[in-house]
Image (cartoon, rainbow, N blue to C red):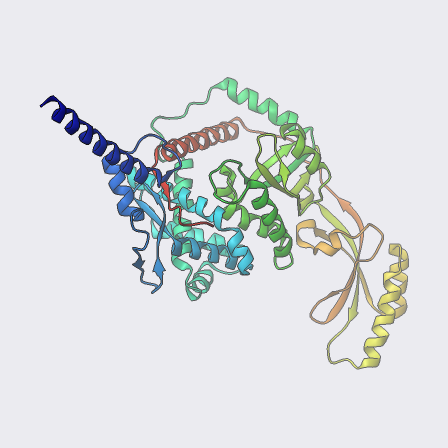
Length: 466
């Protein structure tokens, strides 16, 4: 009798071990980015239902008529391969880069951004935030300005490409993030004391006595959980794409677009914008790079001490006590050469010879004399640095830029001087207080987001390799 009991106990122990091994195997097939604790039975069931871990062949067919698979689960939200494909296509379309290698290269960053957007949507739902259509429309209007078109025109272009719904999802997350930053979830009033204001005023006075740099950034974090792609690789690919994009749009617009879509820092919501900073406020590695940059350029990827990679864009420069470079005035000597496409070959050949003589001029007096000899209009103009073409900005004082074709003429410009007006430094305590309040709201918003994300159950389908 005792021997029978021992045998039955052994069999029972054997089957329990098999059952436990089977359960642990199913659980281990799931990757949870933020929660390494053992999953509960309800969580196991949610995982199986969401990702079909036990049967990867199960699929859904979405309204687009394409086979869809769930790639990532963020609590109750799901991100499908169609969501990822559509976002990649939208980023490429807005960046005017729709090649396959670009679409594949941005895929890891897009996944991370979609995870963050799912978190923002859940925060909005949890705190019952209402996002009106008017706010969405205003955001679209501002976005359209970057392409020199109206919000309605941008919407039509996106609808034509089948990307409007994806764009609106992105816009919603931006608005939600903005609401949180403005203090929509603030539990208590932020208080700023007089000592804080005094300290900030002293810091502002000190900064005004130093050279200031207007910077933007794109950041790729090491160890962010993006599978199959290192921060270094992503940074280099992004840099390569920026180089190609600047041939089709201004550097500042291209940088802002990429920063909003791919950057992994809090500044991404503002297109990577960091604001005015002095060299002593920048880390040593970045400072050495910024000192050697020219306005309107971006750096190669910079390896930070924390292992992250960063690309910097220099938007503007401000010397102590002077207005920013972009607001400075430039004095130009201008020669207008009459030109139209109906001219004969002989007339065009003559214009080419005369333009060659004009370009050889090395002073205002010499340029004026040559223009008079040819019977061309000569005048002196003053222009805002922001409104003149890059080729004129880059031309040295006392030399001529290459001709610029206008409606009925070819204009040749010679920079004579660049003037930066002096400014009287003044700062109001109320403005400083508002700035401090906003900084604390931003910090509070980042804390809310990080805390919520750290508690979220984020599950990836291991079948997705890219």
